[in-house]
Amino acid sequence: MDPRVEKIRREFKPKVKPIEWRGDKLVLLDQRMLPFETRYVEARTVEDVATAIRDMVVRGAPAIGITAAFGMVIALSEKTIDNIDDALKTLSLARDILSKTRPTAVNLFWALDRMYNKALSLVSTTSSVRELREGLEEEAKKIFEEELEAEIRIGLYGAELLEDGDTVLTICNAGGLATGTGLGTATAPIYVAKMMGKDVSVIAPETRPWQQGARLTVYELVNNGIRTTLIADTALGLVMYKRMVDIVMVGADRILLDGHVFNKIGTLNEAILAHEFGIPFYVLAPTSTIDPKSNVDSVKIEERDPDEVRTVRTSQGKVYVTLKDIQVYNPVFDVTPPKYITGIITEKGVATQPLSVNLRKLLKNI
Picture 1 (cartoon, rainbow, N blue to C red):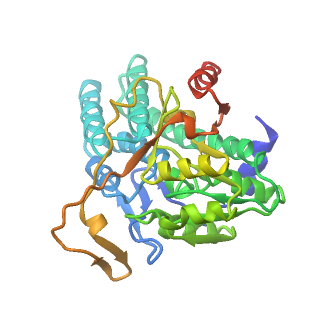
Picture 2: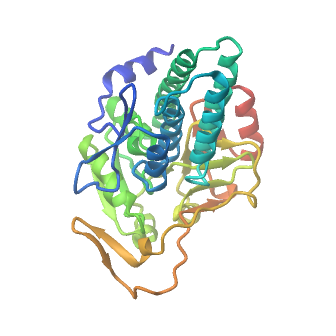
């Protein structure tokens, strides 16, 4: 084990825990309520887990994957199952239910497949449903621990790119709330740099329409002692023009082998502007976010409730800012072509241009 990884694991103490497993249930920080209210949701059934993912109680590709993994464990707990055949049928049904919750984040499908394949492996050596459940519980815990270690390594690679006094521009929330660990992907280098004694600050766009930047990124960065400035999404061009940004670091929900990146809507805008102004643009994600099978035209981009655009969220609830029946196009993600990306930082290293070549080289080392 890299001693730097162990040191960070020991010393980083996040103020916020988005996901906690308590043996027979998941306790999830309800991110819909932040920053106005800190509320937790308990998930005791597969449908509870599916609802939490679908309704964005939990969000962010790695956090969704971890939550779904524990959902597969819960599938074997919520009712009495007498034999292995029924257990596999139950897991297959759970995988089907959970896979339909969010269509774009690849970590969801990666985690579900890993858990189901682990179940198939376990039933070759045991006929006990109890032992099968225990084995799956250990696998879900392993997914969480692997995610945390991956983020620490991402943080170490990313921190090498940050100088004392740098300002990082991000988008949406790719922090610990989005990954379930408290550390995050795009925020990991910021926290690691701080631990190294570097003074690094952040500019966070609000990220309409769900305002993950304003509600979530600002909330967790400030709670963890990072100097943060909130801007309107429409101020992106000006802050880059005025050289208020030294580097852009964003997360990802899906990365294709040719270097196309699917991330929160607005990421493409940042990438094009960064390219125009000569500002390095990095995507940070674990290798579980890399999709080796899809092409750019086959990925479904999720569209959500039109009222997310028609309204703003306040501590009192939703307030309409436009006509209640105006037609709305509300894609949650956009796609950034590889030509706008300086590099992709993973736990296995940094893939630079040409991304279509170097991402494949990086995966071969796994």
